[in-house]
Length: 190
Image 1 (tube, rainbow, N blue to C red):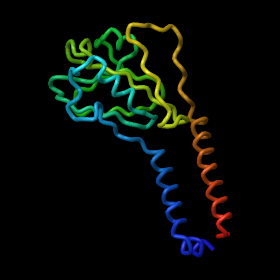
Image 2: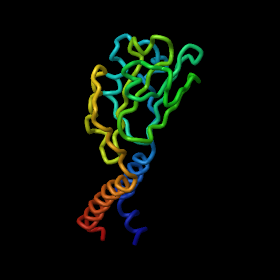
Image 3: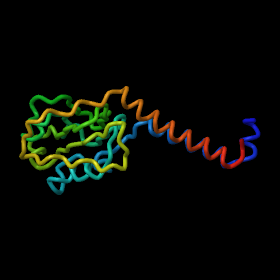
């Protein structure tokens, strides 16, 4: 029956191919070049340059940020919120100085990055990247980063558990499969 199904309907092959592509795309992260160009990790033309770029991008768990810069003159520091606000470079969560830095985003929520070069952070070479949980779509607007002058006392949101993420992904695949089967049945192929 399966041979008849595919041979009688080339569009079914296309549907299954698209479904396979969508499932594999959602599981694989993207590599995202910071600032959309190789030499962007430097003192920006405007202090809000990197945050505007990050606000206009969508980041999900599994994506990888890529910085290309002169490693002899600059670095990328991943820091906590307080060090981001104060441009403190003395105790980063992680420090990268290779000129071709890749950071995989493994948790949802805000991630803070600053330049390790003297005074660069103060001139705006820093950014907040908000990573959406796996349950959110890429088309959902990302929240704007909070103003750097404010300090909030509320605790951070806990990361989404893998179990709930898996359930959300399975329900989407289940809905797609139900729609696909309904389409096959209504077309008279079964």
